[in-house]
Image (tube, rainbow, N blue to C red; front, side, top):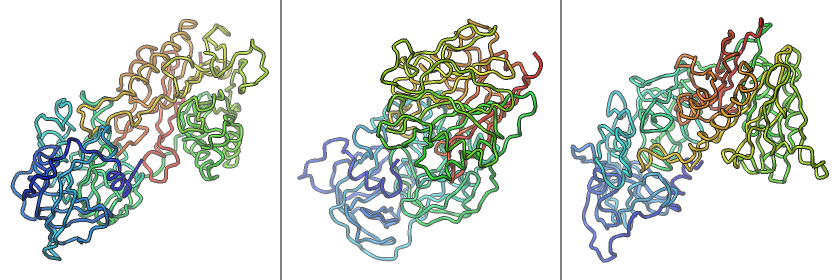
Length: 622
């Protein structure tokens, strides 16, 4: 992700004009900033030359400055601020009263094909300084004690907001923030609802007063919205940016007391408040959670994302992963792991083996005082499972055998062998099947991939099924890491409303494939114990998660939690449940306890972006 100052520089390189500019011989026209901005996303003066546009310089960057009209009108729909693009470091200084000549432009960071909005600018040809030391125009307070953003990005589907439709800052948050583009904005007593990440910090003004629905630890949950797949964007969030001043490292619940001012900018899919001074931080009381240990007779199954863990990473990353497993999850019996990298990490050298990564992780767990763990996975073909090129991240099972769990191995190859006999199955391409075994359902391959040749898994991670026993009772566990949202998905604050999500079909299809497999297990034994776990990259209320749960008769355990605790990830300040554990009816009817262990997603120094989860199932009795 491009952030900070890089966004402004990239905008100059990648931006593209929307329509042909006005003829070069057109006479420059006097104008004020509000005439240029207008009550619209695209200036009616785009391409026109303007002269003597007055303003007070409010902030500077390496290739331009922001200025604001000191004499605003009473129309809140038209912004009084604008960015002046000078190409090189400007001669003007903050507080200068200036008059600008130039051409009005609409620049789209990311280029013409980007679904993001544009930033209205003046491409300056001359800047005259009339006076120094002018008082800055007063900032507009955004929040409960000033101008309050609408509750939805748009209240109705608008199509392309740049090409028409009503412009209504009172009802549409995308128009609300557009009406403040380039202006000085103030937030008061802000509280962080996401951790500092890549130069950005999501906050709520006024300590979050009036915002809904808050998490139990101070964040804000994604809300349901019929127009936006996956939920509303919570437009009351303000994204702070470090382009003009450094931001302190912050966790969810940390506060920025008092008033903090900046200029409102747009880049790469969202509006951002560029603070002009580093704010003071007051630490909150957020602590990393620890779940309880499983009791005798309880089977503990967990999820954990390792974010490409590999031997090239510093030992501290392995130690952090070990602490998450041993301390946070209290050493569960089996962990459905996602994102374990190969031995050479990001080096794209053809390596696919993971034995060195696994050995270092297991050693770190033991060194921290944890039990001995073992590992099962299927070695992928090089660069065939998505993720960062060369890392060959994979799903797998990390398990301990000292409490009654045993992994049932059925023939599978550790990796491609040039002289392998033709009758031996290739585990990367051979689909696992459910078969009768021991009076219930077993697997032809354990571990084995579910429908690896299906188009749903093309270029992405394949779900892995494993057959295990718990004190002799046979179970099927499926580890998942579904296709994520990517840059192909249009931004929530983009020109197309509602935004399209072209990656959604992947998760829809993947849900159907996994449901089909679970049903094949149920056909062998209707009472089979099945656990589906991992990062589904979709919320519990989404179509794919609901389709999997309903289609395969599984219970999605996050849905059983109170709403304020129902999240495993924080995305741009929005808390959402992307990681799931699902149980078949025969397991769900047993006494069980599910826990999201909040120890990663809310912290600036997080080793992983998602919180681990764990279910403890009472397996005593029949």
